[in-house]
Image (cartoon, rainbow, N blue to C red; front, side, top):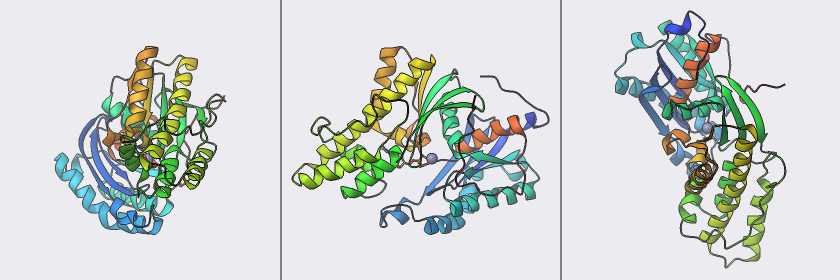
Length: 345
Ligand code: KG4
Ligand code: ZN
């Protein structure tokens, strides 16, 4: 991939990334957008589990307590000091506003004190750059299926900062559906990993759940599927939970993979990539790999730790954004509803 390099930011190499958009407090040091010197993620899962989901107020408070120690640990394990850093990048959105504000304020303060640029990072763009961290040779254009707790997007990635939106969810995000179904089944929070694990013991063909919008367009819908699961379990209380988990997961995977595959063929993409927390799902990874082999497409599946929220992807996206746009203004706030900056014809 080539990208434009406006002076004078071409000399920036070492970036501290900060991620606090939801329930992971994370910091990382990355060189030239690709070489990860350290990546520290402190998960708040235990704090939120008893509430069955992320409690925004608790998340913000935990970020305040954890962020500075997490940054210190990331710098220590990378072997860098403040003077070695060329920029501080932080997720400014989308996400929980209070949680984002902790990361944004900390990043701007550090940038001011250390006299280096502050770079605002879009969390969705960061998930895309997570792919290049592990696959620096990724050839564009590629189709990316970005599936997280808050988003389900099909993106045509044409070049640095150049994205076209091919499809998105019209209601729940895929991860949200996993979390809601898991909660209903009493599997706890976060739901995705719990369903993934339990589904391994179940029969994916046990229940024929609907495949919403499978043959219609490029958008997704998951809320009807979640309702179908609830109705089925209420009508058949004796059903094995593992079979419900496996059959639900199979329906989600069928829809996600069919649409991603069609998008890759229709756009003539060279590669099909996964991003976002749901990309950690074993069945989704397995199926995507097998259709890519059938279609002669390159498949790029980031490792599980790179799929879920982390700050290495923020530092990487920040390094690219610095080269594309220069530093961000220090009067920038959090942008909870930020969207991926897509090209509109
Ligand atoms: O990207 P992410 O860490 O945070 C957001 O930006 O939303 O994604 C979190 C989502 C949650 O909904 C979680 O249940 C889901 O990713 N997830 C999974 C798996 N691991 C995490 N979903 C299905 N299978 C998994 N193994
Ligand atoms: Zn995320």
